[in-house]
Length: 440
Image (cartoon, rainbow, N blue to C red):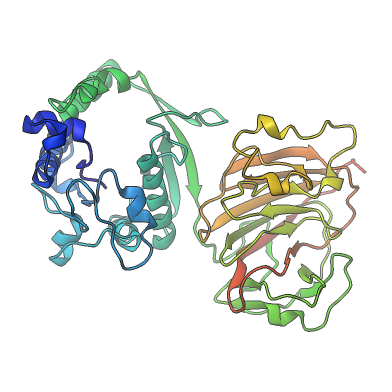
């Protein structure tokens, strides 16, 4: 994805210059060397040169490229380039279209989307979203966006290179044979040789006897409910839904704040003259598994009601990482101690507005960036509930204080947002009713 052109500690030794004397051509030369090393390394594991694609996006700048959502491209400070290139092997876009692509999010996600569509991979491997290296995290975002845009279904095997660990152990472990271990060491040495003292230590650091992965299953948009589920939303109109207050009092005219279009249930945030009105299903359910896709578009917070009296799963802009948590506080049993927010370092400060009314915070920040699709799987049995967000369990079979009777399913609308812009969108809203439990 990147050219390796943003590392002065590597550019200096290969050009035999002090770092403060490096010029753009020195970093472009470094890109050529990195491409040659990559080609040589990949042949050691059986790949051919024609199997490899170099996208040509900048090192020390992939995050800025991803942030460039408009037409103005990012310009990398070392090479001074603002478009893709290849020093030895042409970049992907130039090979296909005869000219480079600008350093923008649309370009890098578009390139990856085209490649996935064309090659239809059975497996995809990419660094995990919590990797300690910022650009490794961005690589995950690019691949995530591309597989969604391509409609690809399958398993992304994610792995960690630097830093953090995940709350749950790796689901997939691959033990290497002695021959495989030797081949891996030789491949890393070929890729990193003669660049810098840091690169000289890579083979020692990363040649481990076991490879570990955290798989993420990508289902893609679903045309029909999975086996055992039924659709709560037909994708065309609002049949089966009505607008009510939290107290379930019907409100006329609620439809103008919702819209059904191309399989998407859109929730608009125009104010309701001081009264919040929320779309709920007309049907009621007792124990169930609720599966749905959601994304925040023009505002928030909002949420998914699992109890028509106010209990909901949070959907909150990324700056407050509490999506998947349970609100409101009346659902936390009185005999449990208060939530120790100070022990949740990733929630303590940014989620402060939610401290007073949450029953259970999520155990992980599993939501994608604002504007990206997410998937909830909410399982309610008796007075217990679990929430899975994007394949990660963030609420695990917790006990709710409020006794739940039969309830409608709804979407929270606080009236936030801008006129004409949806606060949130939902799709693939499916439910599976479960047999009753012995729990009252």
